[in-house]
Length: 338
Ligand SMILES: [Ca+2]
Ligand SMILES: [Zn+2]
Ligand SMILES: [Zn+2]
Image 1: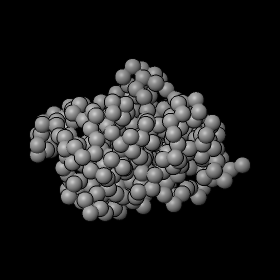
Image 2: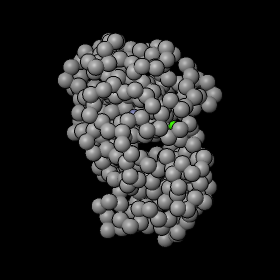
Image 3: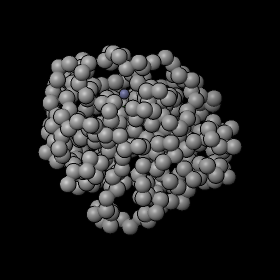
Image 4: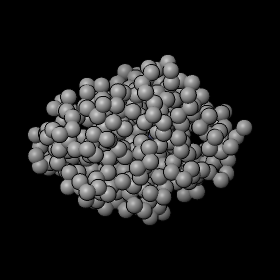
């Protein structure tokens, strides 16, 4: 396990496999209330019933295969894992519902249908509530581990009201978002440091990503050797790495690539199990592209609805991406920069 800097008051004890809303990656939530995201550590075989953690090698979203065409009223093996997926990213929360007992079963109920519709809206898919092929394939895409919805607030706001007009109609519209409560940094001079074991390719890429954000904002970022005092810390983690937001092994089995905490927490972790690259390399993920996204979180941006924005939650393999007008508008709005 990665040796994270000390002094967070974090616990890495095993958490039971209950999920709840409020697992959002945000300083005020993750430190005190966050619980592990258990679904990704479970075997995803749809035939594993009941699931036996670590009993089998996970396969890439095996449960997805059984779900195409599923809709409300059906009971299909694998829906339980789908619920866990949607719960992890904030779309579903049975805890405050009278249907609480449906959290761990394969019933396609009203709550699940509503969650699927919201997910479809956020990703510019037809909001039918039915698990069509496009919806399922979108769920298999590599993405950031931060949830899209925190405590029931759809951070990718506007998604519900936005019909799918195709890609061209969207790129001029701003759809950036902030963390709940709009947390931000009181200082514009931030320091960053790397956790032990961070390779030089990653360090260089992260430095370039900081330069790109600095060029578009009022921030300056300077490298520090002192992990204890740095505002921002960057490193790698694998599976449960002590911050109660476990990674999930390599894509495509584990679609989460990285995550970062909201201001003023400052932590940004790459999933050590992924294939990383400098630049666009097939089936690998570009350090700098992912760093640009996660630094956006460190500064206070949440996910954007604009697919071209760096703050869009999905990050393609074998591709690079830069800052987009939507990202710049977002950071300027958060910090009131003219
Ligand atoms: Ca992963
Ligand atoms: Zn993200
Ligand atoms: Zn982490």
